[in-house]
Image 1 (cartoon, rainbow, N blue to C red):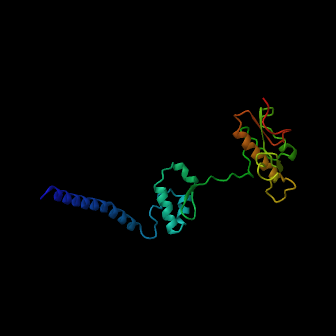
Image 2: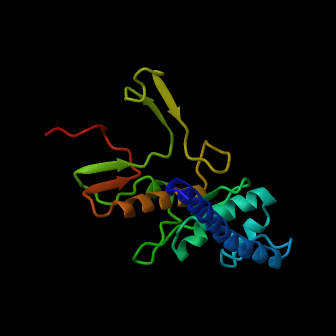
Image 3: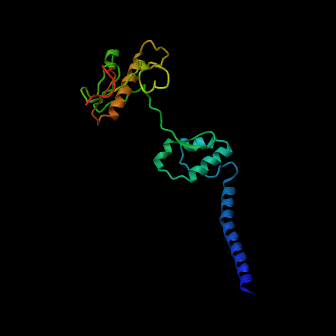
Amino acid sequence: MDTKNKLTIWIRQFMKLRTIAGLVPALLISQTLLAQGPTTPPGLQSPPPGRLQERIATLPPAARARALDWLARFDFPAEDVETIDVDVEGGVLYADPRPDLADPVADESGTSPSGLPESDVFALHSKPGAANVIFVDVDGHTITGTGWNAGGAASYAARAYDTDGNAASFSQSELDQIADIWHRVAEDLALFDIDVTTEEPNEFGPKGP
């Protein structure tokens, strides 16, 4: 037998071995899926018990399979499970919980910026006299002469903050929420020379040298 024929036989034998080797894990996986039964989605037990597992269980079969396949191929810390969610098509995403603005967060002193009268809510300052100022504008504003107006409308009307359908005045609940918004922004920028305020500055724009 010449070398060419020997090589052809060797390649055929090698391909048969590869096929047999590939069938073994496939058969084992098939037996595992059959053992779980038709009513148990494969891999549903992979996510720990909780909101994510319950959410996956409610999906249609195709969407459920897509979500489980994605989770099986994605490495994530265990603590991320609480913020992982799936949509109706089985797409996996992160969803941070929405903060409850009606329940202001207390500052380090233990006091909460709630129950303040309107005059105080619109005079809040985090660092009076700081070199830089961020204005938390919630009572509405007409925007003119800015980069937003270039090539667009001459003016834009920004609506006032309103959660109760009455834009003409602020309820105490809305004032508490505004104070909490200010508090959160001020807390995030506390390390910088920035005064976060709800009181409208006398002028806007960069300061001169």
